[in-house]
Length: 433
Image (cartoon, rainbow, N blue to C red; front, top):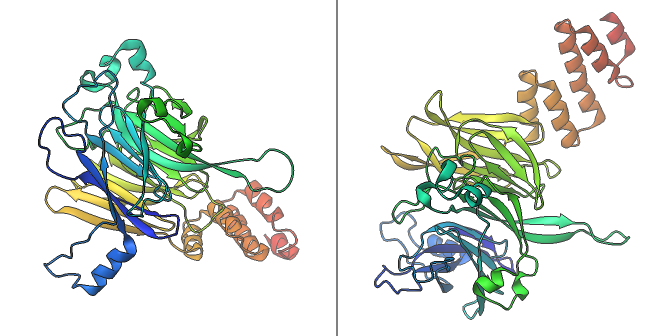
């Protein structure tokens, strides 16, 4: 399920799943996509008894059958591949579906909410196989478990700003991208291959980027059309597990979570990394209140020492863990959904089933109070500058930092911070020290 906004700014709910139970082996339209108008859903819920046992039946605005993606070298494969990932563009005109056979089906439409919408021919994309599989073969060195090529673990649409050529004050161009990650885990039965505690082992997939800028103008379909889309391989030997890739809307990079660390990628190359131990279960980016800040990333991982799942909110600007929450024993995170300042974490437990955990970002003033009480003066000063606090307010924090250094007998550090308050603090205050 995905929620997007169409071209006329109408919220739209897109659902992907089985349209009819499988019958014969030659069934082509096995899966289907349904489009719902969120305003209609809200009206239906408000006009009916929301908590009654008789649930209202919601009719979709449009239903689109999903043809199966072709598989390289297996054109006569009777067993349909499993759907392992699903993503939509910002307005719903592009829908990417990842399969267990390592292929991606790209659906295109001009106005997805219109009942008379005419779909363009679908395109088939095939990310490159991992470098280690090409050189050593599937199944060697823990690559491609069970001798299978990696499945599509994550699909993420994002925008990348590029500078315009020539002079002037023209705004940068927005280039649409599709980031694809694969993983070498096996697919169990007909379910999505989400392996809890398998955060994407080294050498088990790839990370690549497809340029979606001119994809609506392509006339070819199938594999021939997919070959026309430019792609860049960002990592040819390491992918990630399902739900372990997210797009950061603030800096337009993607974050990939693996067992040893959290890696960031641009549309052209690797960008950086932050150490995070533990098998990752899900990640999601939180843009935060401050538009100029890189924001936060929510990381759900399994702690080997406590044998419990931990949810950490990592501050990308200040490079530290801003929040930590440890779930109850045997609880695992199966998904994370985040907006600008609120995140919803879907948690599963064998005994209690599914539950929802909400995390809400505090206001800047509340964050500063916590940081100052914990003597994190440097982080508080950086946050105050990002929030455009007045020079007097920032000076008061620097003065507190200098007094803290003085009490710790760090004379050099105290003098350095007192010098930063020149012009705002009375000299006699420092002289008495």
